Length: 456
View 1 (cartoon, rainbow, N blue to C red):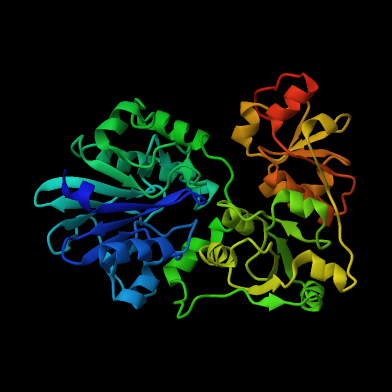
View 2 (view 1 turned 180 degrees about the horizontal axis):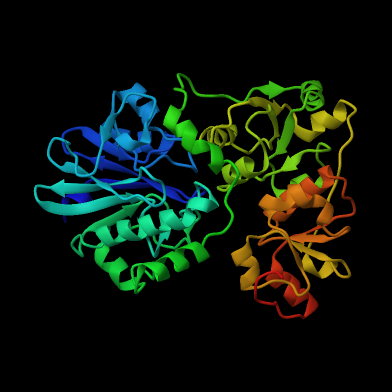
């Protein structure tokens, strides 16, 4: 068993689809790679091993989460390692292609691998002359490469060609070199995501269709064809990471709010986010509130559907973790968290306020209505209800007037559909029904096969 097998701890954020890594350097110190601002799992892993993070390396200016490197520098005195070309506005050790850092045993070598972003670096971990593994960030990922359109459609092809050169460079490493990507299954930076999160150079040379492309033009066409939509907040986080997130000196909290305070917040332009399960939201909710059930993907939809500039109040069940709400919001830069409604909807009603209900039914009770599918394009193309209108959830608020009236709103299980219904209710739609289930349930209940292919 080698150094990497003994000393590397992957830390997966399944909601955002990303992996950070903690590397035990063997002397009580550690290297953290692409750590996010929510450091709870990394801190716990370091404590279990008796480690102090001495180095925090970032492969690129992340668009889908705020980096935890600045916080680690504050908390543990870690040296931040990042591309000099990123022009970060805080203390860090700027690296260029070929630069090496002695980690006190192993060595970290910077490899310029632009494509996903201009300043992207991969980090090759060396034990003497032996390549142990490479942290590839958003360059080579399992079965693909990360998307190249985050700097705008006008540069997507140019960056895809840079991505081609970067992957070809990584492919010259020995076949047994471990590949430790940041982006993976569930990440909107992946194009497309795969099921595995780590791999080897040899495995990718055999199985990655992009590395198997016969020429650069084919590579570019395949990569650009695989990109779908991405959350709106991606457009602002790279700059936030360049400036550096604010250091947190205490655990951020979600204070209690009275019903009157929530009512005043709404009147002043704030937003109410209801994080309860879809069925609870359907049974009764604050009028105008947005349903985003608290689960792994909570941060994604919060950042896609709401601005980060307005105060947010939350409706929470007693058995839900308020800390999870806070950290999912903070890791994507949402800090204007006013608090949570004390006593929930019961307190809202007791204060004399109205509530709204939404029909949430199984497929056998949905007949005779138009069907609105709010899943991603690839999901829709893989199989949808015949005649369904397709509008992705992330685009729905801007085109709510085009949504069919009195529709059955469906997704894969019901959570996104309930979010969509709450958006439509805010836009003046009524008599909506949300499907408790997915297209397969609808097809079975109505004895109709699903249709494949993109929306036309």
